Length: 296
Ligand code: SIN
Image (cartoon, rainbow, N blue to C red; front, side):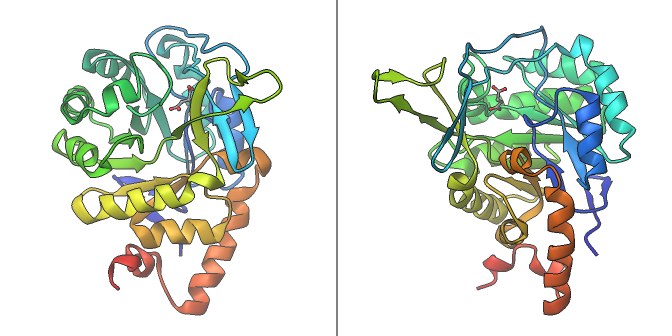
């Protein structure tokens, strides 16, 4: 009842692991696959090994988490084995990749063998990467186009909400040939320790995830659905089955879960039967609820 085909990939359910959580090793990705995710996305991988920002790089706030990891990763040159191990979990494995230029993105995508690629043009706190390029529609189009030209696997583009109008970057990704967009990455934010007056994160500011950003993400998905012909994958603050249904009603073909996995690794297998029971009671299919909020 929950299975679907997304950009040519067969998924048992529309619930995926989002980039950044449990995605650095093949073992942890495989574990999440075995916990019922329909697909898993790796941690963002770049050209060279990167240690990331200084600690503290993550802090819990009232309404979610602020992180400024700074894209730590072992480089694509040391990552294929992890993808291969993750694939033993029998669900599609999507490689999240980042670069500063179109050539860097295509070099990495060409070198890795994954079921799809998610282009991170939306990390809000890594100088020269993420939002530094992903807020410029021309660059988003060029990067997407370069990766599409370089590989045959599906290309998803993860968008930032830190723009005036996410529709323009979504449309740019679509013009570049993206097979799907993913919305949203974290919302730029900051926390200050009032005892010392110091910013808490090593990088001073970071990206907010968790429950607080769900309404922001829902609105972005809703807006993108109205203008795009390619699927939108929703992410941002999903912590139970109702949230997942809400995203699909806003126009998401599938959803990703990040912060909530930290609290409950079994969240995928908890959500699926509840969604199924809800839809059975309403006599709705996934197709029925897809974009339902646009019909009123
Ligand atoms: C990070 O590794 O810095 C987080 C990635 C992101 O926000 O896209």
